[in-house]
Length: 111
Image (cartoon, rainbow, N blue to C red; front, side, top):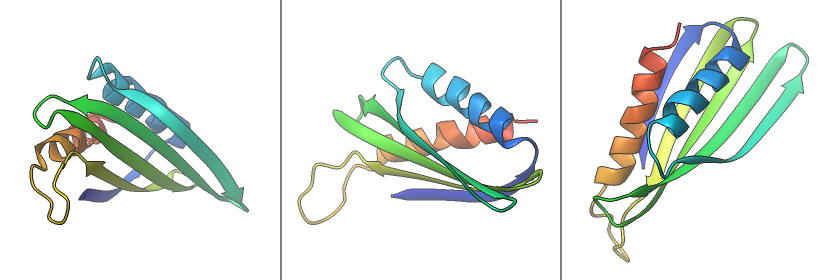
């Protein structure tokens, strides 16, 4: 599993739309699998799950984005997983690292 975390300022809905555009639009096999939006008071949690085929690994990898939004302050956690076909040890993490890199690029270009 690969992980990236950061905080940014902005609109949570605009960020989710931007991520959908960049992540799904960045690969012919990528799609958003599911989503969740929750609220408690002024806090909002948005979760998005994406999946795509990894040609380098010959399998599918997943990417999960969690955004905690309080006003315009956004705390973001992005995790990718999958892509290995080993039973006990994880080999070939190229696919999940590449998928995470796409999300980081999308975050870098937000704003």
